[in-house]
Structure formats: structure tokens, C-alpha cells
Image 1 (cartoon, rainbow, N blue to C red):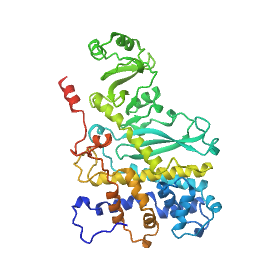
Image 2: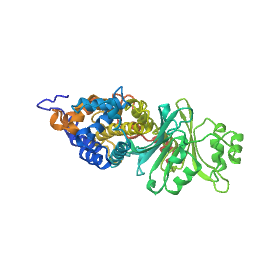
Image 3: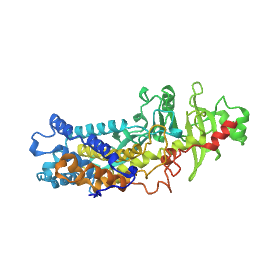
Image 4: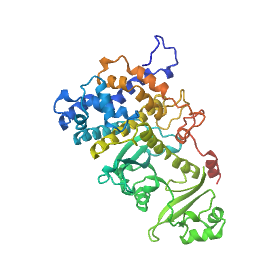
Length: 466
């Protein structure tokens, strides 16, 4: 527990009281005790109140995600019993994890995502101009081989995929769904009117000609890697002078002109040129961007207008897809999504949702700190204190699990206050590398020592002169 001094002489921006009410609102939105109890009764999760306190069980199920025993239902049950609830034998507790409880935890996950979707967005610099930018990716979770028929993997093993949609505005998962790992990714990304005016950064598994056409039809800006095997040709808008400037090799010019140029034929040279691909009678138009990256060269296709983003800025946008990879690491390593040992399908799916709720909660706490420092909309401010790191926030949450659970379910039984919890999360979750090694998302959002959002100023000057 964190002790507070009688007289707080710290500057106002270091005082956790500013966030205490928001932290309380967040945790109570993710764990709405009265709603959980009423839904449990309606769904038939519990038939008699004295047999199971469902709200406490749900808190244990999610917050135990960071323990070494995570993924095991016994860990959540033991934590539930250690808080003074009646002891139960393993055979009895296993019956709690049924279809009704799965429905309940799925509902709680949807409510958590709805809450974070409503948080203010921060879209400065190259993220501005769109309602939001989303990164879409999937992560594979291996399961017990007994679940092979329900969740078939791509080989002789059981596995499922969690398809995640991460908002770069609030830096959190705003949607996800589960599918057998054997299924292809592409059908799991739908472009409709709800995405109009947004931007999308997509993993290679979801890329298709249909995706490009759907994005054009619904005004969605798309940034993807060039697929190996796709044949490109110069767009009709490219002049002879431009093609010679970008492609000094006449053989490469001929390949692009003939529509026979693939990823392997492209030069290792920075370029930003208009191409088309797909059927000759109904081609898809896009920008081909080649840029130098760590370990090699990157090749991107995008429909982002050249008037708003230089080639380097589009490349930086694609780097932001790493944010969803960090979310995968948080869910798997921190919240133990990779440690699911359930032997039946329903408990396994329950534990997947519990791990996802946990990761959403940690990211939401980190975003609260951004909002607390005024990072909203297109505004950039010089940080008065270090931003929070979601992984460190989650470690703080797991450290305070017992008191936090009591604070949520029976606040009269603990001396911890929401002010103390907010202070603990703020100081324990600070990112120590935010100045020395800022991430791509930190640079783009101005969470650096300078407080300025990253832009390709040199490229913009060259474009202005041209």
C-alpha cells in the first residue's frame, strides 16, 4: 500500500488526485459489480447467491492474468477463496466455467471495449485529418491438443486466432474476435460505411485486391506492404521523365510498363511513384513507396494522397503497426494469453476474453495519463511527467491485485483509496525510456523531450519547392 504524506508539496501535475476519479470510473466500468451480479442471475450463472459471488470471481479471473499461474482456472478460484469466500473443491469450481459464464465474460469484454472507444482520441501530426487510424493484426494462441476438433491449427495442433483492431487514437484494442487458427485472415476484416473517414494499417495476411477496392469505395486510407507475386505497372499519370528519374535501369522501366514487375524486381532505392495492379480492364491505382528500413528495404502500397503525406510519412505510418505487436506482447507475456491450459473449449475461450480485458484495462490506464496531460485531438504538449508504459502499468495492477479487488467489491474492507491506487499506477508505470528511446508512436504524437509531433519536414520542403 502507498502511504501519502499529510502535506503534499509536489507540483499539481504530479498529484494523483487529478486522475483518481477517472481511474475509479475506468475500473468500475470494466468491473460493474451490480451489473455483473444482475447478469449472472439473469443468465443462470448462479442459482443461489451464497454459492458463488460472481463479481469477485470475475475480478479474480481478469486480475490473476499476470501471475505465474495465469491460464489456470485454479489460480483464479484460489484467489477468489483467499478473500474469505467459502472454500470449494476443484470438481465443483470447474462447473462454474460454463456457457453462461462465457456469455457473461463476453458481455464484460464488449462493455470494456465500448468504454475505451468512447475515450478522447489523440491524433496529431501525420495522424490528423482522419477520424481515427486503426491497426489490424492477429495473434495465434496454442491450446491443449484435446481441443483440435474445436480449434484446429494449421498443423497437428489446436490453436485459435485473436483478430485485433487497435485504435491509434486511444492506443487500445477497440474490437477483437476469435477464430480457428486454420482459417485465413482476409475474410475477418470487413470494410463498410462505419469505417468511412478513417485510416487503416493492415498486416499482410489481410491484404487483397478486394480490400483496396473496398477502401476506395468507403474513403478509407490504407497502408500495406506489397505482396510478393503481385505484378505492378506504371500508372498512366507517370510521365517519361518521372519514370527515368525513379528507375534509371531501362529493364525496370520496361518491366513496370509491361506490368511484369514484382517485389523482387524493384530496386533498392527510395521512391514514391504511382502504379496500378489487378485486371487490365479495371486496375487498382496506388502509390508505391520504397524506403530504407532497419535490416533491409520496405515496399508499401497506399492510397494516402501525396498532397497530405510524403513517402517518409507513409513509411512512418506503417511503423505504427508495431503498436498492435506491443499489444500482442502485453496480452501474451503480461496477461498470459499464451498460458491457457484449459482442456475444454468453453473455459479456454473464457480465459482468452479475460486476458484481453486485462490488456485493454492496462492500455486504458496509460491513455488516462495522456489525457491528464492534455494530449487530446491534434494538440501536442511538452510532457510534464513521463508517459505510462502499459506493461509496467499491468505489473502494478497485479502487484495491487488483492487490495484492488477488495476496493472494487467491498471497499469498506480495505484502507486503500482510489487516490493511493492512482498514485501507485502513475509512479510505478512510468516509461523510463521515453526520452532516450522514444517509440514510433511516441515520436508521432510528440511524447518526446521536444514535445513536437514528428513530420517529414525535409520532404515537405522539397514538395513545396517542386
